[in-house]
Length: 118
Length: 111
Image (cartoon, rainbow over all chains, first blue to last red; front, top):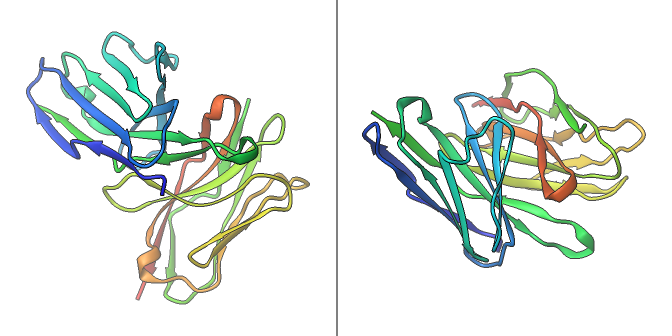
């Protein structure tokens, strides 16, 4: 149980184009999903919190107009990188919160999406 | 604010060696604690967790005990395998389910 998928697993695009990444919780509903960015050999950097039915909350320094997040349903959140540039090339990982008993929420992660902008 | 400190890496061990990866934390309240593992080119997988003091999380031969008195959550395994080679992240869960991660440590196990 608690499986999270991402699509696509990798994408190459030209500079100036937009790319959409999907994150799905396959066997549970998630009112909250998170989007992270990971640079080589580094830890995860939280970009934003995605809440179903409301606007995403972005971390300081993350451009909300560049990284559009939509949490359309309890099982789907999307991240759109608009007007992508080479510096946006990175590994993007999403997670979905599984609400356990006694308030013990656990984040389950997707397999990640490797974005390369040429 | 919350923070997680992991020991510096990388760590290289021979197969069947004993593993300890140190993790200490600073947090307000009573966070849940996690170990995640990341294999090359993949996302993070939950390895184990503990939700309150003195809880022991265990999975796949790995164990970690939530020590409130020392604010630690050290990861141990009695006999590592080559397949355990990966990056290990210690994390704590704070407000709004947000995770605070340590920097991660790379483990390489030699045959």
